Length: 402
Image (tube, rainbow, N blue to C red; front, side):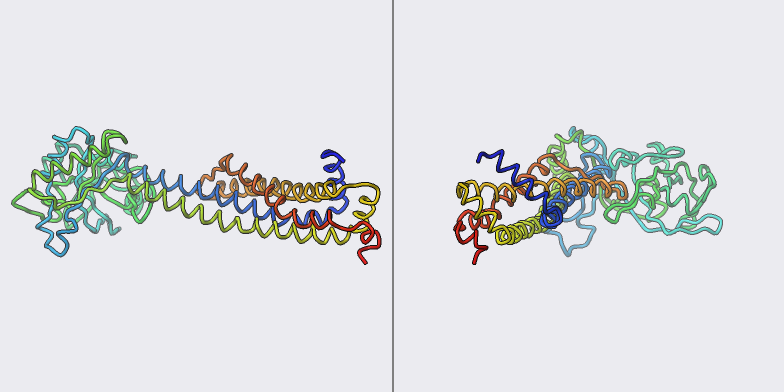
């Protein structure tokens, strides 16, 4: 009996017992669907996280005051100043934009409407550094920094709370009993990892220092931290190196920390990738369970078909032919279950993409791997029942195993 005849006989046997064959495949179907959907959702989560991080600023680095050697010291010892940011912008060729920042939680009010807002004093460079867009009006300019101008740009959520459907441009709002003119409203961006630019208001950093927080220092205007963007992704390392050198020369010591947003992105990518692998591995356990189910059903099938096996051997079927047929039956069950499970997994991933911000993607390699694993499971777990069938004594089999 050749391979084609063995395959035809295996197909006829399986189709003759549709319910049993379907239930046998169920474990493989669930396993493949779980693996495919987990891999797809994991890929989608990884891409979503990367896109969110990148949307908060291209090629971004942050500089914070203090390091492991200044823990416990007063903040004045390691205070960054506005002149540090200006020096980086003027000297470092790998740096494209710099955005020094002073932040404070202040109360904004307008005609009885009050909102507690994170107010950030900064420079126009923050638009590029944080990848921000103005929806209405404009952002403040450098001449307004020099004049300590009482102007403010509202995040979209802040504008909605204070003005509702009214046009906020040109309207006054109150901060610390001072009147600020609204000159712009930012485009909605959404919250991510605890930060929400939509609930932030922006003022010139000089106005923040002199009129709102009253910060003074013999070295210049103290800032909380500064963010900067490299010229491109390839320049991130050079920008960090140049920033470190400039600040170390200016300050006489390294009492600051430079952190690259790319490092955070790489770390998040590693974490989400590891989580995806863990989820896929857990889902893969059901594939093994499905394989055990195939072996159990095939062993039962051998018992039920002892007389058939004995008759075939009595008319000349070899042990190899019997072994081949049962192996083919197990492989067909596994591959068919794998294909159905893959279809369900892909469909489930697409549904997740329709109702969540994630955009799951199913790599072709994952589908081929799942199909290959399914076939291998059928082959591996089909060996024991196939060998048992092939070794049946034809005389005993014809007597029904008695």
